[in-house]
Length: 599
Image (cartoon, rainbow, N blue to C red; front, side):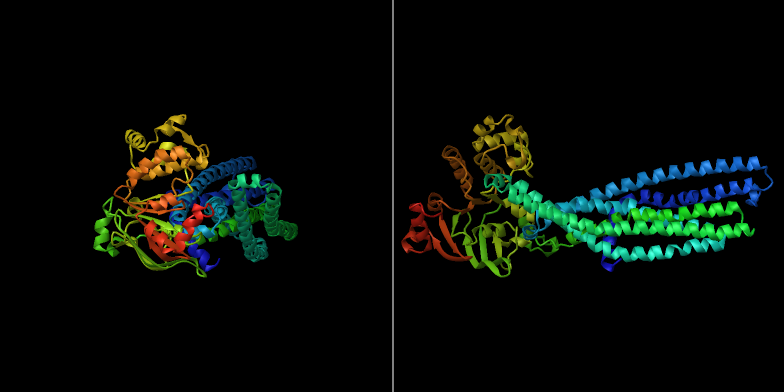
């Protein structure tokens, strides 16, 4: 096992700490289970020796043959019952530990994935991430559960049987142990090759899940543009690649099983040949030979079980690698420790509201190194000022919002809220002060009330009152159960306008200091927009507002307009001043008045 694998396994071991007692009990039971398994062939051999009047164990001597047989049968029954009972306890404990391990690792992986920046999620398909959170975690749980404990049980059983055989007849014992060497070496040789093949299987499974998730999410587009056949062919190619990857692992899995069976047959044949000759020469009794024949079968049971776990173990090691890679992803957006924050940031962190001053100082940002989005961007928004961001597609308007909310970190420059670098503020404090309404509204499954509250501790009566103040009563009256109405995935049982209305409302009830809107009324019909506009005006009063504007009416109402092009601020001023200047804004406004462009 590589050093990196060992490090990752050691990193995952603390997850087992809460189950120390169960694991300790399971490990303690390994020895009596192995002893009960090893004593059974010995008892059968002694019974045959007693029937043939051959030498038996000292404590059986002096008994009549019938008494010896009764004693041996009773002991054999006890050994079988003890082994089965203890194995049942072991199996229960192992499965319980495996399920607890699965839950803990999956919880931490999910939390870590949520902490990772959008930059990571932009380059990682959702289906591949789901594969690591589901099937990879399950494979890892099997390794730590039945796989790891099973290997220890097999090793203990092998050592107990080996010691018993050598104690009874060293020559036959060493002969049987010698047959284990080629099997072990071959398994180690195959292990390295299987590991690479299994990693490819996991990668192809992740791609398959990613393709499936993408097609299901985009089903409406698929059907409207009649891409069913084309997408089916593409998915068939992905499935074919996964099938080929799985086929590549079948050879190693079947090869080791076949090898063990051939070697075990050869070992039994060798025992029969040498043991038969020793019996005919009087050097050994038939009972002892029977014991060794049974031992030769039991000796290969651990290897057979190891071969059965071969795919499971290698799949688990691959899962360790893939899960380790995810856990090793650095959290790009993180909070500074309290000791490293400025006094102003510490004092401000305990306040729910702020004045709302926003400053960008020489901010540069790029999603990729070769494609800069913002270049040396600087501007200041006064507390309570309403500012519109205008510019062609790709000018960086949405990126400004993402940086302000600390969904990404700028490569250069800094962003200040009320004179404090936003990196100094606790992330919950920052995002509580910012109310963001995006054009693409996302609603969770659950009821309407849950989607309005999200993380806000608001009682049902207060929520009902706030909804009435925001003019949501007509919408709630149309819904079957009002605030308790269950929403389908992404709010599929609501119209686009209704979803947007709820998005505006859930921001309003949080009373943010800075309101950020990406054309919040874009999907509302004129009647609904007119109803909402009054509440928006109240919401905007005495608050800083940053609006990504696409319509001239919204732009004209702003105190100041910032015009962006290719990530640079090229113009700013009022609507009247910018129209008179005859620059880019004037050109865009003229085109929109003629219905030829959006701002």
